Length: 178
Image (cartoon, rainbow, N blue to C red):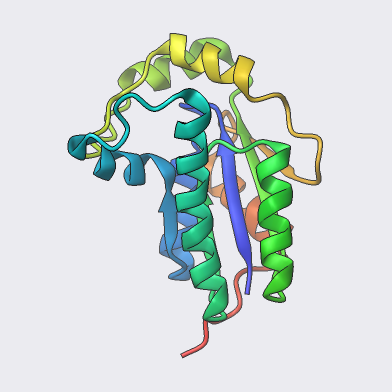
């Protein structure tokens, strides 16, 4: 079983790649924004400090990861990630005989990155679209990853990036236990 975390700034293609890997493999994709979108209408996020918000975000994703791994099943996670959370999830994966693979998505052409962000319509119920100011804030809040990871560029063809990810994780996901 494999734990794959796909991270990167908004608009760099992480959700598209996570969904593409999920569709090809049948492995469930857990997306942080979808979890938050489900909580937002219920007021759960109202008034939370930034540290409390982030703790909730990563604990929800961590719980879903643990549950998959407990059952001997692989998982894909679509979220912003830093080294501390990656280390925590790597330890969780190791406890279940799995390994964490981290893929960082970037877009090396800022003009194209802005264009993609401005045109995207994710339509996550309860959640919002973000602007370039949010990208700048996330860039400041999330330093570059220093741990082992693969970097893919949104300027490269989508299929090529999926192939790079598949190679990085060793040829694909193992079949899940029935």
